[in-house]
Image (tube, rainbow, N blue to C red; front, side, top):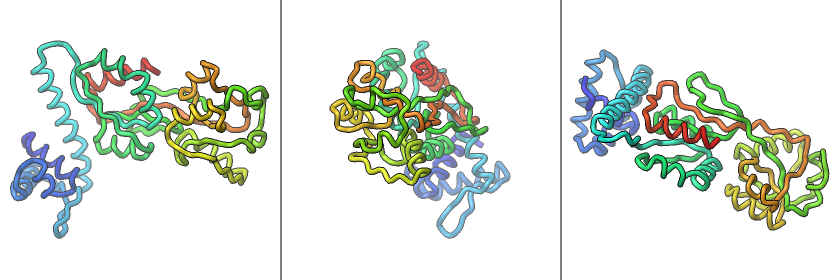
Length: 294
């Protein structure tokens, strides 16, 4: 068994096709088929089910795919260490990150990160929490940085986590900001500017609406929380956002929290990686940097 066979196996598994793997690697389809067959003979197991012209990983093939990724990652790290002429941390790090955290990371912290680690190239993929975990399971990303309900899965190592406060916010002169211990029914007549349905920190509000059979029709729904804050600061409506999004404008006095006591949120920032993932110095440096930012 050699590394080239493992690489071909990984490409074939990711593409679900010997032909596509051959095209990606610059081989013939016959050469890829032969390498896979030889690898199966060496290991003594079937890696793929072959039905007509389609292939599918066997259960054993799925197990070995995770290990093959680890071997190739570690091999790449060995090459980098061997060829490095200095102590600078270098490499490509792929992060699966929630959209709003992506904005926070790039806008507030990226310049500082790049100055500290100029040799690290980041690739950030955003999506739903389900998408992020799917990418990690397939080893398409190095770790997950998510904003959602608290998640525990013994297949993942939690690097850092903490709860996130979420508040209703309004223009600084809105009369609701001067009142205390309001109920949700007290603010229903306001115009709402909300994030899109399904976004993690809107979910507590949607659950409240569903429980009480309230049909709330926002005047605007969009995913850009920075733009929502700006619209709220111009007295265009109220919104429901996590504190780390609104912190700057609240500090500047442009918008204020509304004290609503009966909408509770269970939203957490969590950084996790798959238990089988090989954590190289570049990945560790990025995770440590984000932990310091938190």
